[in-house]
Length: 94
Image 1 (cartoon, rainbow, N blue to C red):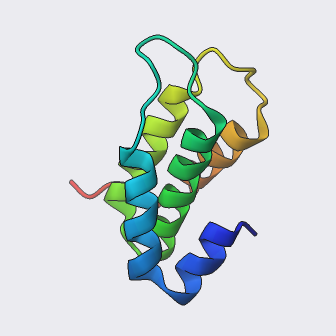
Image 2: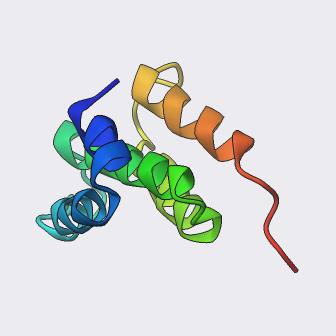
């Protein structure tokens, strides 16, 4: 378990704020590869949101993460993590 997820379990409000700050920081250049730290922050934020029952926002963040993985190997472990977590979220409400 990552430190971000552990922190999310113990101090969710604080962890979500810090993760949102990390994701809102420097973004990948248009068309360029996304930095590993950015992708990890997206995945951790998505996981933390899912743990807190915020499925709609978790879905949006994880979809952003998967989009940012374009151009990377298909079986990248972090990409697989994001895809599997997204698949486990409850379906969106109509």
